[in-house]
Length: 114
Image 1 (cartoon, helix red, strand yellow):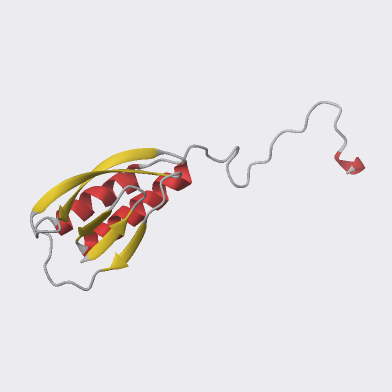
Image 2 (cartoon, helix red, strand yellow):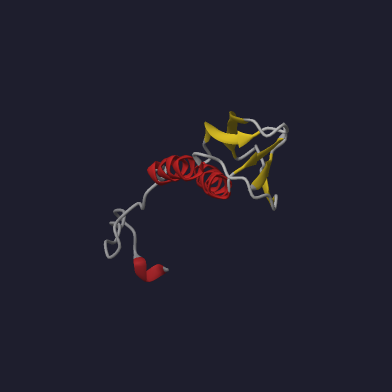
């Protein structure tokens, strides 16, 4: 089990889920995007529930190993869903031209002057 720490609270969740949250958060920050995700958590009384988290650049998170034995029922499933979202992100910008292609020089440009 790991504790996920956000600006609005701390949440006890499974190892795989916590690691996937961090990976998805990193992917979102690289793309300067935000998203809201549902993850399974364990409450202070041991009850199982879900929490909706906002993830993005301006929403820092941290993960701490809780060292507890109980696991979340859908830990692996939640992690798979988060990782699928991370892999589905597409870069905002691509290369201006393909490797090996050279951009055309504008009319009147003399490369010998450079």
